[in-house]
Amino acid sequence: MEASAREGLLVDGAGAPLAEEDSGSVELLDGTRISYRAIVPDNAAALQRFHHRLSERSIYLRFFVGKPHLSDRKAGYFTNVDGVNRLALVALDPDRPQEIIAVVSFDREGNTDRAEYAAAVEDRWQGRGLGLALTRCLIEAALKRGVRVFTGIVLPENARMLNLLRDLELPERLRLESGVEYVEIDLSPREEPSGP
Image (cartoon, rainbow, N blue to C red; front, top):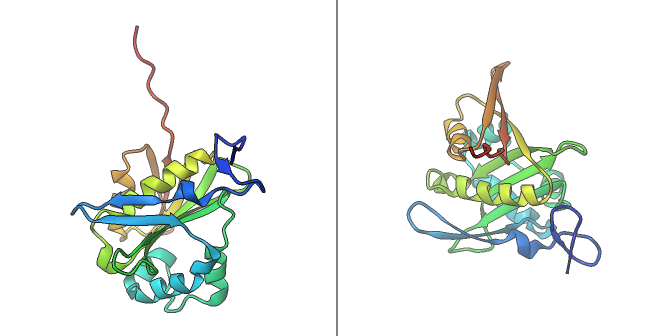
């Protein structure tokens, strides 16, 4: 193991990020512990099953269109990430650990410190704090990779996502344009200088 130049990120000998650093567990509002880890290419079928279990409304709020089926090509795209510029964390069902119940991801915008953020939580797990807890883990991983701002596009009727972003208690900017909310979240707010 060695530290990369990018903020002490642990990498293997080939320079790839170590997945162990992007795994752990989170505690939900009811005390349930949920394991999470970085997505890997072998998760393509599990991601398709996860997508199939989402309600039409959840799919619409995430993709802005009805997508009843996640194609093999799209599943491959979402699961083949480099772990530096594109990263996704998946939460695993405590009763069926081979099944994904939530996904949060970022996709860096070019060579900047900004990345597009996305999240989806299986309907039966919504409202329990999983999206918020998993997003906090993603923010920690993003900061280690030099990402300082998450951007996103959210439909105004997606109250759960807008509330999640507010619950992060990080500086945010919202702009309503063409019927969607453009959101920017500052992941590393500058601390106010302390007085003399």
